[in-house]
Image 1 (tube, rainbow, N blue to C red):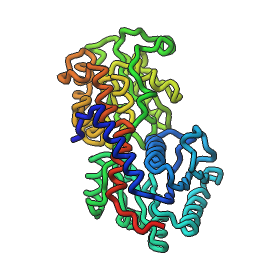
Image 2 (cartoon, rainbow, N blue to C red; image 1 turned 135 degrees about the vertical axis):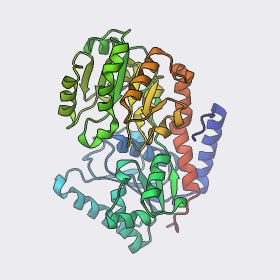
Image 3 (cartoon, rainbow, N blue to C red; image 1 turned 180 degrees about the vertical axis):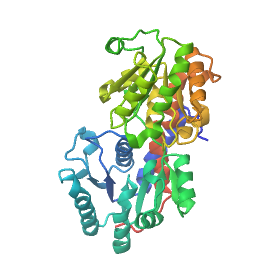
Image 4 (cartoon, rainbow, N blue to C red; image 1 turned 90 degrees about the horizontal axis):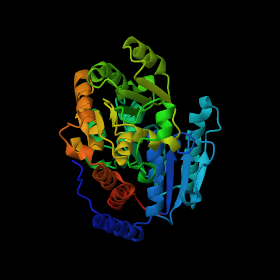
Length: 407
């Protein structure tokens, strides 16, 4: 279970430890392979950007070559890109992009022979394995969630098996990988997701959003932020819709805001009509990053009863805004909500349990007083999953993981 008892002095000591690590562990040249970090902001992309920032902070004198499969250009501040060479494959047509990217990273690996390759997507390990066989270059990879489930491709399984380290974002991800794949448990390290607390702060319900969605401040509001993709149906937003008639029976003014876009929207629209929920559901569609914090603040509870989430950064963002949060009890939400210490965990398939738990939370009777202590809740999630903790955990992993001979 994640330790929540982290105070400011401990964090200062962690920073000193990180500074000392810089002096004792030299990574002269790293290759970093990401799907993308600039032109799309999904969970893997956000994690990748934080990973790069943490690496650069830990090892500021290291030479970095960062290869991005889908990005076409750099969209970032100068402080992040100092000392980093970016290589973009996104200008290739999508049908040719995988081959072009694989060729690029393979040729660069052969030519430059970096000390270590780190990739934030398991699929890229196939090329990394070839480079390890050819040049002896060690490689690490990150296991997030659905990308790591039910892997049957023999080539990918072999590449994953020979990875020098696998960074799992949650205990759930780690345990499922070990159950499904023939992996050495000692090679898997936990590096949970992190977030930027400066972007997600406690505030009142934004008036401009209340006006936009034609809502009143006193209305109980449930929020979900996710992609509305058919492949992401495990997120559980349809279960919330199914629970709404019962919630509405006890809380007639309840309103559900579902943020996100994708190819599952038509099914959701049909479900809303079928359940006669047109007056109490808003499909907000895509929301820009600049308005995401306001959307967390408009709600009274954030809910995503998923059943296949690797971790779920959205839980951390909601908690940082001091919001009571509900997740599923069968996936990475267990880690994000610290086994129920930071939020409510329910059976994601049990519509009745989802309804009753949300009613309890909205009525202020859920038996976890921390969920209603906004400032304490925010500080707990920062202490447990903030960037300082992320950076410190990464430093420990890198310090204790041999990477082969230095150049």
